[in-house]
Image (cartoon, rainbow, N blue to C red; front, side, top):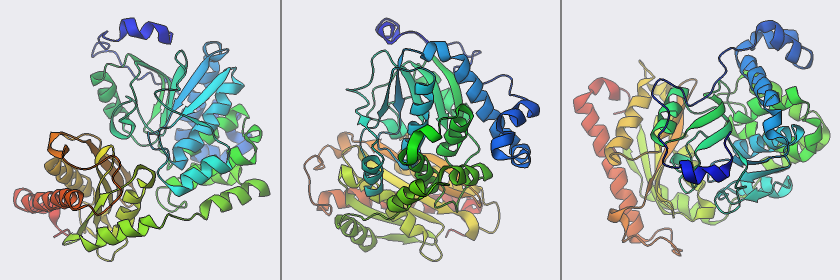
Length: 440
């Protein structure tokens, strides 16, 4: 990897030709025998055999990092998470931090812009995780790594982060590798040396824990570090209920075998929310737009440190009987944010169409708006959202320093977005009526 001090000279260099992949993925995955030798003793031969595909990727990541030990030794490393860190990203970063130090990194910094949920702030404080500003405090010549999100920086859920041109290691269970390849090519990223994206697990923390197991660093994490990784698995799989794979279950079990780790995880699961969160909820349900099995809640202005309430409200909408799609709309300092939660179990046929429907609704409401990332989880549960930065149309909205979540201007803006989404659904019923069967 080229040192960071050369980046200024290469910033306008064109990305590689279309015939050359920027995401450098393992061309040859380890065979069953090699995987069995690495994981058979710790995970069991039957488990290893039954989960060969994901463990092959884990072993490939182990070999890739071990072969890069010379490039890591004596260097610094930056670990980017989402701008607003969550337990899965933070837990994955803690494990990667330990692996890089095991391979000789002299300094590792976990880069997170903000924490928007009380549980996440409790996690950072209780587990002693030190976070650095992604722009001001990154190591200028450090190896750039990323966990639980995909490059490039400066887009989607890393919007405020200044981009980099090269990545050393990336692990993410959300994005499709082909989409990431297109994104990095458009953004001018030159290389992602070790890319493990689109991982078939419920949480990135499960993959990173298995990788940490291969490197033998889990014991050295201590109870607090193991609890951080365990909470990442727990929260990203909705308490191991949605999208959890056998590797998620097994890694959670491995991490929480000792009483000290169990105690910290139990402590972190029991969190409290600020009183203002109930004001947001009241506003959302008071201004609710309901069309068939679709519920859209205009929330109003949400403070940065309360930002995760947007997703919480979308989750609550989906719990209402007869709801297939729950959407919450809010204004934050970053822009207009939309959180989507959906479940296609109420749709009799072609359940996969729910993703097409959501794509259409958001594209209609935000033409050209980027940032919607969804995750399909059996039975076709969809989670995601979009953040559209403030533009000229929103320049009159009171944002910074605003204290009232129910400011009329902001609520009207959110309500207008909700009405646009309803209009998009009605439009879809004329254009592709088969897509809205069971929704209207």
